[in-house]
Length: 101
Image (cartoon, rainbow, N blue to C red; front, top):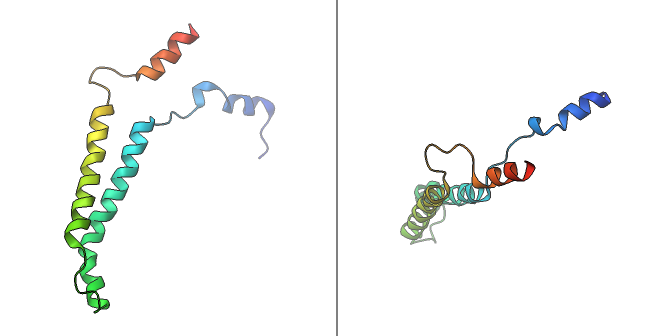
């Protein structure tokens, strides 16, 4: 890419690093994505029934309920793992700051 050694050193400086979300937030996002997918698929089951006439009873209610459950489970996970108002840093980052002192 044509970086000089000093530019490469500046890029690897800890102040330039991106902070990653915590694992519970990532897990909540994955659960929410699966729940939203089920909620979006629910109305499309009628289209599938119209295309394939042998499918007489698509599972509308179980798909909707599983999507709603997963979607609200993700918000519950986020609620449990969120930091209280007034605290800006997570416990993990505070511990790492204490270790550097």
